[in-house]
Image 1: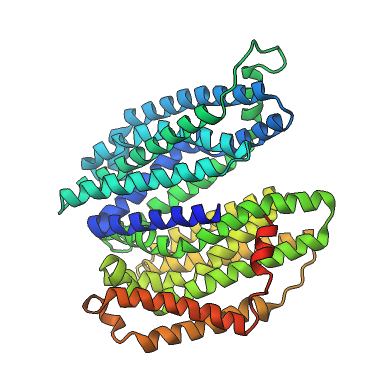
Image 2: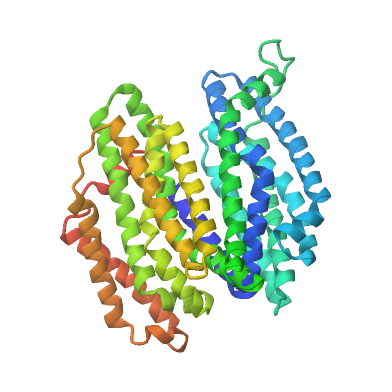
Length: 501
């Protein structure tokens, strides 16, 4: 799963970088608004329902009730299809208003239209993904996502390259339509896999276990998750709209505001989010492991797994932070050919550790059955972020710097809340020098090596790009070498990571 997740993230990252290079910052800003709009319409069918499907399919499958498993699958497919069809219709009815009031551009009306099929396809593909997870099969959904990202990359980037140069409005519409294209291939592969490997005949259902009863159970379980998911999506949507709106109030033009949003969410954030390649797989395996240890009261094993997860998080996020902070300009030129992005990568680079730590702490709390507290903490963080963005970004003396201030304050607050919650559940002693100090020392040596071996980092476009990439790879090996010298990586580190799964 880790390997497939890394492949997935790499393809997605390359797609984001390629899209940014072809479309430019302003079009990427519109694209980010389109994604947030899509998530609003997909919340009902993609937040709580998939989790409920996974849970109930796993329960019925463990009992050998294949008929109930098939009933769960069929009833949720039908339900999600009709609900998503209604939502897509609502989107089309209000498409004019969305183009003018949300995108601030009436010419993006066809871009709004392109979101309608994505609502339906995403709703159905999430049912298949949840079904496979419930059947304890992580391979099919992982491969489906790789196919989705690869198909979207080949088709959309191919089209954009053929018609290059691309007007920002046209590029945005093509990119938004690419969501439906990628998800269609995901859905197609998932459907074929389900039909080939998990086909069960349905007999006449009895009164206790018919499709309606199972669907009612799914909706009942999913309701609180759907409500929290809706709140989270609404807050994310508010953030996406607030940034350009408040920048405009601070004196930026509409075009500058949208371009700034594109540079932050579409260019800097994909880099900062690379740490999720490792933490997401770790969290996925950590949650069931901690849940099982909690039931069996294996508290020492719980402490060891938590320490291991936190240690692995710092080992991955600290060197990435150093790379973003000290090499922001060459990265901005190399990836986007946009020197302005360098400032955003540099500032957001300091948040790499905060994002990774917040993610892993939330996963730990979910594993310890503190999902309510973890969800509350995250919602509080997002509400605080929205409030700070409104007041700080709109200040002409701060502008976009107000966003960075709100980002750091809100993430520090949620980490402190998660740590406080964790301390109430389990006592945990950490060797801070081993967990934090050693990765910092190794990262200093790594950056020193890069600085000594690359002669013209500030003008990378005039240098040898392949040499720079090779230098980063060798620098990574030097980082690992220093970790081994300082005994930051235990001999059984990999074995313990795999065992925690």
